[in-house]
Image 1 (cartoon, helix red, strand yellow):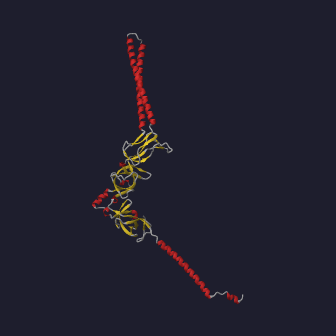
Image 2 (tube, helix red, strand yellow):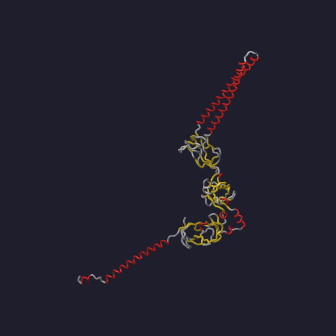
Image 3 (cartoon, helix red, strand yellow):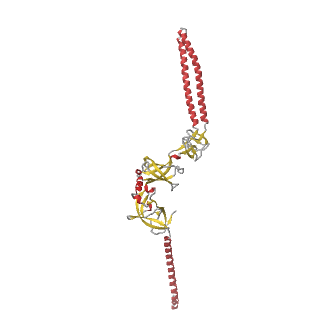
Length: 410
């Protein structure tokens, strides 16, 4: 190749400097872009405000301060009955509706009684026939007795034979036996009449006690039976009646804590439907058996005063009170007298030998050291560090920090 040709391949210095500068600019731009993405991601992560769940500190002088044990259960009536017919029949009348107050013995429904009445009429006819037969036999007996006395006289006069006398006596005895049998048949017919009348009465369903109808289980035209006939076409009940005056609470208490419960013990009940209504109650009885599957013992609690708002099968929470704690509080002694508030145990965090909570104020966390008192079921007394009404974090991320902004979960 000629020297001139080689010289033509040489890169000019100005062109070389322009190419190098462009590459450097592109590298710097890419680096700045990556740095911007990282910075944006960090700021985005930092801008995520944690969500927490809070609960307010409750007064220390409330019933919770005396609570030995908490449990939950349901309102159950002691008198609750599904009214059913004693016989199988077709419903011909229903005279109630849900929510209706009924009195003991009040008519609820009727069944088709045509067959039962026919059986009753047949039993009455049998009795009447048996009674008519007795009258005829009694007339025959009088005539037979006359013949017997006449034959006795003739036998004494040596006119009638011994065979004639025996025949007359046998006729009298036979008629007496037939009359006795007819009377027994009358009694049997009377028993059948009572049975038939009972079947007629069974076609009328009445309320077994005073209460409120809570369920209407049959309609006119449906078949009802005291036992299930299968197939879903035969009802086994007419109505369900509840005696509202017998409403009480039934709870299951863990057998490990049943020793804390005694008959007559004071209880505070709170219905799930009315969480701000505390209902004074007391323990009526402890069922003397345990459920081996759940390891619980059933306890029945009676309301001190019933209220129309208390309905069967309502959910309810109960707190068994410690009357000894009440006595201490009255004297101004014991830990409960120094307690400032009551908070959920889930709000307390441990830091070595000390405890602390996170309070939420103006959307920010405030870490506070607390001094704890007695354990009250799922709650705990606070002797210092928290005041009544403070909002405390009970559920939230593990990485919460003092002064951090948070969002309260509604």
